[in-house]
Image (cartoon, rainbow, N blue to C red):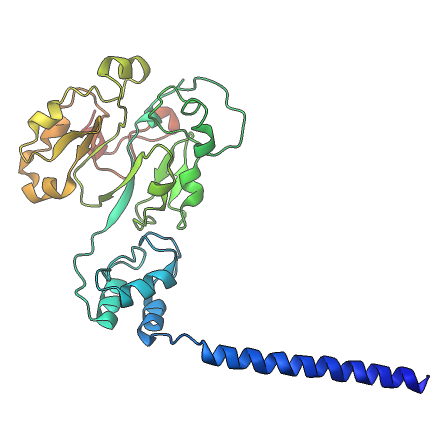
Length: 296
């Protein structure tokens, strides 16, 4: 081999090595100069969090919540819903904050379409997600306020707590941690978080008049206000055209109301005793439990 080529190769390697050493030293000095000191409490909080990255705390992941709960005195330590009370206690101990109450919440679908058949108003051809179908005349179901049925909430749930039965979401309360991901995903805002100790839930979100609702759905709310008038705790109200229950007020009043709102309702399925599953058609293979039968 020509000695000139050997010298050229050695010179090139030396030049590249020198450039690498120069930039390596520069990066090391820059990293040292601009290093951000990490609060050891942030790392400690990250270690005890559930690590689900579900966003239920309202922050962009566990690391963001850890930084916020350590550095912001207004951020409470009980926002990690998958971790429940044990994680809240650990975070409170690390940050020196008061833990506060930790309430077991579960997602509930405020729609009674699961008991119906023949609810399709047109054949939808498109990307099979609820938010997309909802743009086309509120989806292919006849109730513009009802569940679209493509299971976007089930796909978004990080804990696989939602399964689709007859194009309707069924929530497993044993797997649901109350993170609220499904609440944020549903384009019609049909899902809310309620305490697992709730006594009654509303299964309709229609804002139409009673007459118009019943032309579409025999299980829909008539907005007759009977439940509102019957509640001795004043925990039931018409909010933005939909019957809502203030569960904390309801539970503080106690069971002596005798579930007056359910008994006052003229529609068997508009307000039900809280149960894991809504009332399904018998054709779906589900027999009502004794608790569910109270609503019949």
